[in-house]
Amino acid sequence: MTVTAADSRPARRARPAGIVSRGLAAVVDALVLALIGLTVQLGAGCARLMVVGPPFQVPDVPNWIAGPIGWTLAVCYLGGSWAVVGATPGDRLLGVCVSDRAGRRLRTVRALVRAAVSVTFPLGLLWIPFSKHRAALQDLVVRSAVSYDRDYG
Image 1: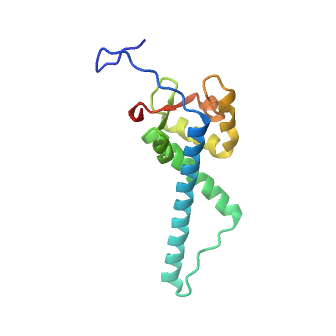
Image 2: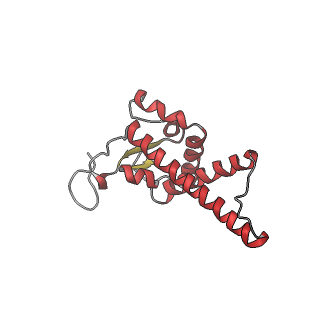
Image 3: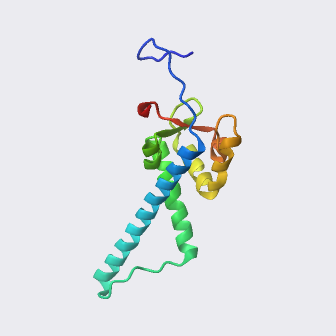
């Protein structure tokens, strides 16, 4: 057992998060990203209205542009959240946090790589039930762990 620096009690080992918690957190984050995308499109429509005039029209962005922009937005949102606070809003709502295997917050590059793998291969979560340590594909790639946050338990 390890002993925390703040006191002499043994540190509790965080319990790995399961597929349901992580899947629901991903759904919440997808909804947040959709809301951000909608806000950006409405803002662009408002800017167009001020420059060109009526009628109000939301810009129609071609898929070959919207796809990479959406992917980049999602990677920055997820990676930034994991690097800065250790959890996305969806993770916080479900009481889970992302860290390296030692329990430390992911550094920026690892968080962004994890986010890129998560966005590119979202079905990587399906590996969790088969993993001894409840690891998804993105956890195996960057050696990360997702556990229930002790502050919520």
